[in-house]
Image 1 (tube, helix red, strand yellow):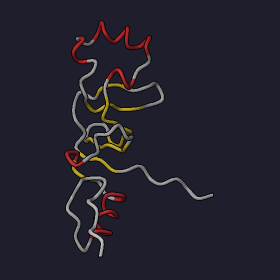
Image 2 (image 1 turned 135 degrees about the horizontal axis):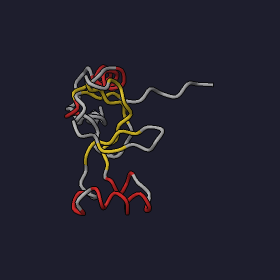
Image 3 (image 1 turned 180 degrees about the vertical axis):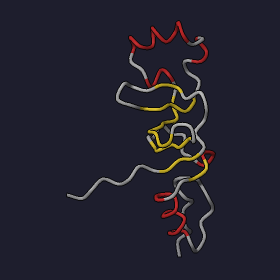
Image 4 (image 1 turned 90 degrees about the vertical axis):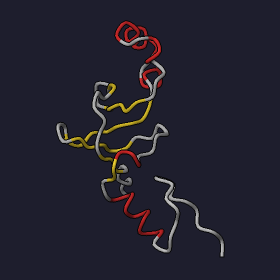
Length: 112
């Protein structure tokens, strides 16, 4: 029997209930400290603003060159490449001042 691979979302050691672990990550809110920090878009939750689309990223990855020039006046140069949680919306998004408390994967695309 081949060894089970660790959970791709949190790295938990697999058990006989491995499929239930994967299902839990796909369908339930998880503490933010277990969230992937690889640039993937996920759902975030915070009591003061509810559900939001979030991503672990940097200012330089989130903004275009023109916006970065404008942001350099707002952020110290050493913060442009510092990683943090960002919200994503129709206007582009921005750095979250307060960390979300929970996260969940985006739902799967509908089958057509």
